[in-house]
Image (tube, rainbow, N blue to C red; front, side, top):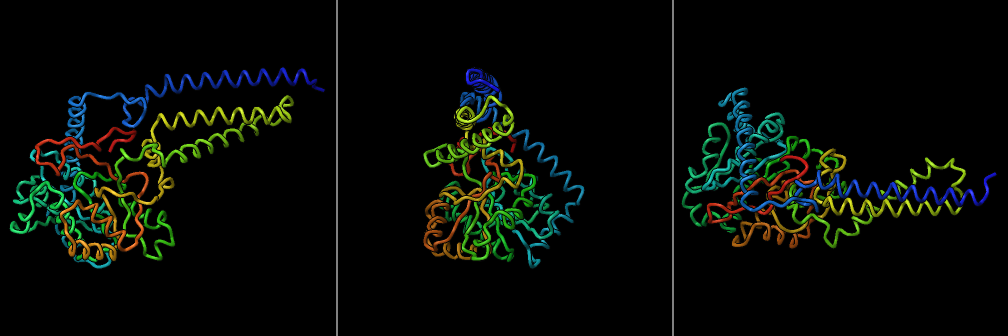
Length: 409
């Protein structure tokens, strides 16, 4: 039989061991491992900030390398299929009934050609060609169209539409009103295909390599069944700026709950593994359980806070089963999917209202007026690769949403 003195001594020794191990784990994690592994993650506490010029040069170099690779992949794909056959196939799909998805891609040329459109098309075309229920329309929003060199080049292989110069010149390029008019134009073009779902993409919204498979999964597996049956949802945003996805005040409960769940699981596992320890009975087990829970809770809160919520969300990309839909906040339209009936309603709303404001403001007014639901998918399914803004009269305008993440775009 174990005496109370032995039990007290065992408890003290066990507690010292737990605290010593915890101190070591805290030290190694927060002062060694995370500073080394997280210094290139933009939203981590350990992010090593660069001087603006160095950062810009780095991003430009990354974009050039990505564009070069995308162009090679696209040309190889076109050669394998055949240029004439490819264009014929996509033109044919524009008139085929019962299409599942229609992609509307709005492209605007920049004074410096970053080849954003080429990168997006190279990522999308193989997926669309493989999925015969999907079609594509590219809208060259420039006047004259030749300004957009990427679109001119791609028009040899793909269906690209333009507006008449007289209509295009009613609004100046690089303005919010022009962007809104362009959005309405491509939306109407996509509606004409009668596809069940319409996806409007900006030309610097680079989709994932399994983008269409992700869309099928979201529609059939992630979207709440009641929303799907009631048809009360207006759209799903496929991108929201990571800058605003951090641990702000509304997300503090999420941080505490997530950390508490991890601590609870750890405490339960510890109890199971140590159940046969005769020195840990009664109040001693309860005391150590709470001690371990508090230590792990503090560890998890620190780890998640220092890692950054944006990178925690990014880890959801590891499996579609981690994807989740949340109510969509206002702002931003790089990538949105609409059901056909709501796209028709939105087009009618845009056609009968002033388009002098940014398009995302107008769309939010449409949602409120019609009392519809809007969702955001987590994680983002496109990467905002734009470093050269189309909404700027300057030849160069850094985009504040181009960051460094765990996974490459």
